[in-house]
Length: 274
Image (cartoon, rainbow, N blue to C red; front, side, top):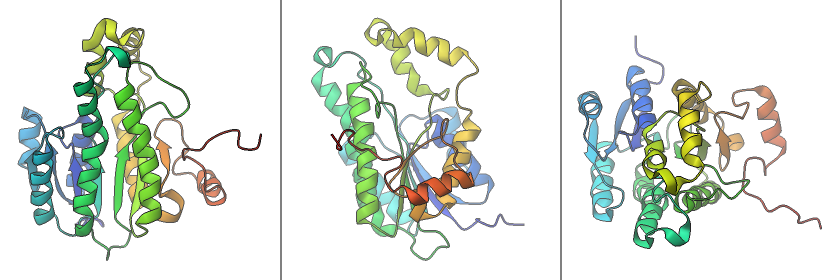
């Protein structure tokens, strides 16, 4: 028997990342058509390649690579229902004045600019005849309520994605644009901190402790939350930044709060009433 959503089509940019692999595996098991990109070939990626419709090599730091991947995916996955933008690069780790600026700028390209290039190029191939509006899902990081040091390119990119999610939701009203923060998940992204040692400051020890603990967000919760965002109502979800670890997603209580507060889970300036 086919899964009730067997006809969905999903594109996962960063399918070789840990979260990307988990999403691909979940949707393949449901009978979805899945395609995506990878940067590094591994045994896991080679196994994934045998299961999905199309897997294109793409280095997000290389704009020509991105344009080529866009053309391939648009041809193979016309009528897509879900577009995931999963790549995340914490490098360069260190205080801004000490970073190599070209490496810093490249991080902005990977974490922000070329992710939006994918959206810009692939939007015209979206499916507008499905039960749910198509979903574009980005991944957020920290920094919305403080100023984390030593990750300025990564943090600035993620904050820009949060605002861009809101802007896109206002401009493209037939797509569910959302962004989700997975929290601490045991993935390869933390290798940047572990490899940086002293340049990461206290974050190095914190990463070691966190990854060795039982406090990280389980991968299955990340996948479950992504599926909730994909299947949920656009009028409640679009333009917002959700947290897998801290929000009561999937609850009637949260639905009620979202319905009455259009500013909830969005970037806003405090103190305007002074």
